[in-house]
Length: 339
Image (cartoon, rainbow, N blue to C red):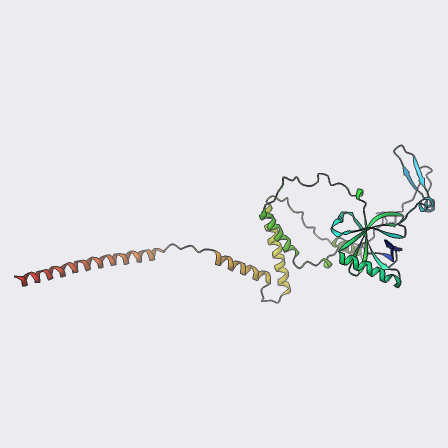
C-alpha cells in the first residue's frame, strides 16, 4: 500500500510514530464524457470568466466571494503558512466509550501502522489499553490541509482512524420522524422480529457484490465485442403496505420458501430439507393440539340403534308377562293346599 501520511499519535507525553494508509477503495468502471456521434473525448477547460482565457493549473488560487460580490484571493503560499498544529500529529483529545460516538459523524477509514520497529512497543501499548478499557480515542488530524476530527479505534490487531464530521456539520433531523402518536402492537413487534430472524439466517456479508457494476461491465464488454447487450429485468417496486400484519406474514412465508428451496438444492435427492422437516413437525404438533370434534352418527348406525331399542323393549314386556303368569300359578297352588 502507498503511504498517505506520516506522523505520530500523541497523548500526554507519549508519542507513537505511525504511517497512515487508505483502508477502503471504491470499485467500479470509470466512464468518460464522450461525443455520442463519434466517441471522441470531451475535455473540460479551465476558463476565466473575466478575461475569457484558459488558465493553467499553476495559476489557479483559492478564493472566497462575499454576499456583495467582493472576492478574497488566497494563494497556495498563504494557505501553506497557516498555523496547523495537527499537521503531523494525531492529537488525542480524550478517551471515551464507543457508544458515545454517533455513526453519522464517521467518514473516511484508514489503517495506522508503526513507522518503524522502535514504534512497536508504544503502538502495542496503546492498542492493548484501548482493547482492555473498551474505549476509543477522539483525536484531531490534518489531511490535505484540512483539519478534522478523527476516531481512533482497534480493528483486529491494527489501530484504525476514521475521520469525522464536526458536530455542527451534522444536520438537525428536525420533524422528519413519525409523530409520537403512532404506536405498534406487541403482535406486530413479534412478527417483525420473526421476519428479521428469518432474513438473517445464513447471511454472508462477504458474499455480497455490486450487481449494478457487474451489469455495467457486461454491457461495456458487449459493446467492445460488438454483440447484443444483455438485458435483465428489474424487480418491480413493492406495493404500498396496507395491512401490516398480512405483509409481515407474507414476508416471513416468502423468506421461508426461499430458504427451503436453497436447502433442497444443496441436499441429496430423496432427503427432506430442514425447512420441510420443520413444517412437517409443526403440522403434526398443530394436529395433536387441535381438539377433535365428535362426528355425527350415520343413518345406518341410527337405524341399528332404533332396532336394538325396540327389541329390548319387546323383551322387557315378554319377561314381565311371564313373571305375572308364574306368580298367579304359585298363588293358586297355595290356595288349593290350604283348603
